[in-house]
Image (cartoon, rainbow, N blue to C red; front, top):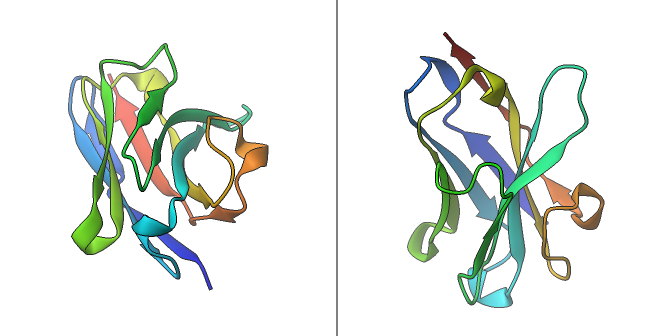
Length: 124
């Protein structure tokens, strides 16, 4: 059974950084899954911010956050990280990781497995 556990969120001031973690179990990274990070702000739709292939490590980002966010893999720990830098109040949201053996990209509907989410709150 595939399980994803998100962690690393918090309450931070604008300009701060966080590293979000997504610990995956039930599959190996060599199985070639896509893992994406999504966020959902209050009253808004869930949007994809970054994704990565677990076998080839190729990453893709939402253009508006490229340069501030960085997604990476730790194969030994079966964990995907999202480093978020220079945080802004508009980055406030619940961040979710998701995994799928077929889909790749930033469309939430394409992902089968989801973590429980970790909340990021940025104050100015």
